[in-house]
Length: 411
Ligand SMILES: CCCCCC/C=C/C(=O)SCCNC(=O)CCNC(=O)[C@H](O)C(C)(C)COP(=O)(O)OP(=O)(O)OC[C@H]1O[C@@H](n2cnc3c(N)ncnc32)[C@H](O)[C@@H]1OP(=O)(O)O
Image (cartoon, rainbow, N blue to C red):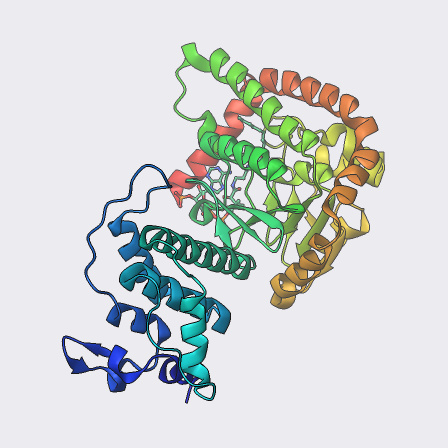
């Protein structure tokens, strides 16, 4: 016999467990909440404005809500509910006191009788308030229970943003385009970073959906531009890029890159602004700026020489050297490399442990590590964007982009 069955059988006499004259015990005996439905007579009342108004409708709604409670509220509360219900529907207790040995009936009688001359209106109100507090407590519990679940944010088209276990994950989500970053995606990433900076998460993660981390700037951002619009395109591009990189410079919490596959262009350079970079051993790192007639961005012209030394930075940023994950780790761009087969499992277990550390301590420590450099980084960002704006108008750059689309057309 389950707890509620026992409670119902003990606390509600057989005569109460009837509906329209038919015995309901066999069908209904299991759930306390259902007993309340059996006990509902039809009441028509009007509250005056003297007390907080509880309408008949509210009272009936409360009776329905009791039926939906998932957790047993405990004997004491159930006795209170019973007493208030009887008082509300029948008025003060005037039935004879049960014998001392009839414990259950006596407990119920005592509860009802203890309400004395409480008016039916007040009893209805107290019943409704009690139910409302039980419902609120239960939904708060459910929210707490649900906290380890993943919550999805916003109405994004090009990225997926979720929070789980104090980690906000921003995932590039154009796998069919190798997660190339379109104009819309630049804007959505900025919005997601702004939100992640303010939300309850402890750390934020950037990663890619599919086989690529990201193939960098979407070269379509430069396609189909009329000659008369070239200057505007370059100017607007520089403004957008400056703002975009600025969001990484100013991000207030630890920012982790989970590089699930190859990374190209701006998605490589931005790694210098991330606080930790974990890579799958399938990942490669390629910044083909000179091949594209362009120049470095993402503060890499300043941070890469600091991270790996000028000679190595030159190989990547001037001569398009594509690094394996192991090389990128040896050169200090990547923190740690994991076998692809266990990458996700190992990385997320590690990050969950990190995200349980005190949030504010992590944030202030990040500021100490990065804060002094911020002004410098913004200046570098401005300069890089200025140079790129010119590069985008160069023949070298235009030819490289035309060549990319021609190769595609031939395929
Ligand atoms: C506001 C402006 C800010 C600018 C900031 C400055 C940023 C600079 C950079 O990021 S420079 C780097 C730019 N990226 C590239 O040069 C990479 C170009 N792509 C490739 O070389 C290849 O696609 C690849 C090596 C990434 C992958 O090759 P492969 O495995 O053979 O796949 P596909 O080429 O067939 O690609 C599948 C599909 O995706 C499209 N695509 C891939 N990358 C890009 C891209 N960067 N831009 C646009 N489209 C891209 C590709 O065209 C295919 O599309 P399709 O199926 O043909 O429609």
